[in-house]
Image: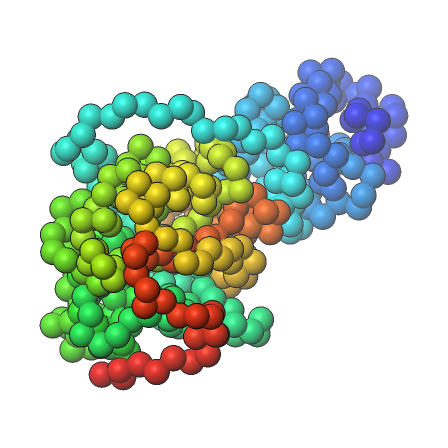
Length: 418
């Protein structure tokens, strides 16, 4: 409440607070939780049936706490414990989970990232990166197929108009990236972190380029190769199950969509060196598409532990300073597509909920609840401005073959249609 204290809802009386079931410890824990999340329009309903509003606004959701242990963990470590308790079924959310989380995020205390530690180089770094990728991306293609679009694109779509379907918006994103890269038939492209391979196949089929795409997820590479063979694109779209640091050759363009969040701040310099060494020294150009922040902040501890081990959403400044500036790359365009990712997640979450029974046949209830919370929380984070989605296009500093205006980005470009 505005007074900073926990008060009963209209359904309770002052005498209810004195009932033995509503002990002073529970009131203290509720007050501690309220101070942490702020005066947000949520109702907290305890296992004894008593509910307390955290704000004078009408609540957009009710958080039902099933036991004292869950309340204790929420009060002492809300950032991690909310996810753990929700996954375990110790709390339930009635009403709009995404809207409730968005209101929490608006005032959620955010911590700076920990100082970088010096890491052992070489095979240790690559083994750790592979383990992290397997934790998230090797869950099985059947799971992701339930709620992604038909091309299996697991990154922010581009809604050129708000009423686009997810399939239309993901195709628009692929074209948008290609237009920013200014691809020409016959060019060589290096894609780092290719997901299920949709962008590489699109570049090869529609723009006539030769793509080398690398990824350390076995499941994704297997799927990408099968699709490329089915579409007759294996000669122009080569998929390597390997880390970007191990790929050789010289390329006209470099692109990374949704990988930078997993590289780790300590490896940004290495990424910049690879881009510099792989790109044509005169006309090389590239694009980085990544989830980021407006200022340096650590990722939510529950998401980092349960969903995306080792992930870190960087600021544009961190990326430009460590990846591009040391090699004299010129930034051509920096765009924020935050609201596009919010809408993408709305589509994903709707499809996930429509397929939740199928998901439950593949995984245990805690897994399904964790992913429901992750998708809703991600949507809320973008809605609240807690997360951003950046696209940075760049080129060699001495490249003079640059477009005079951005006009080419917003019209259908001619492509090879091979």
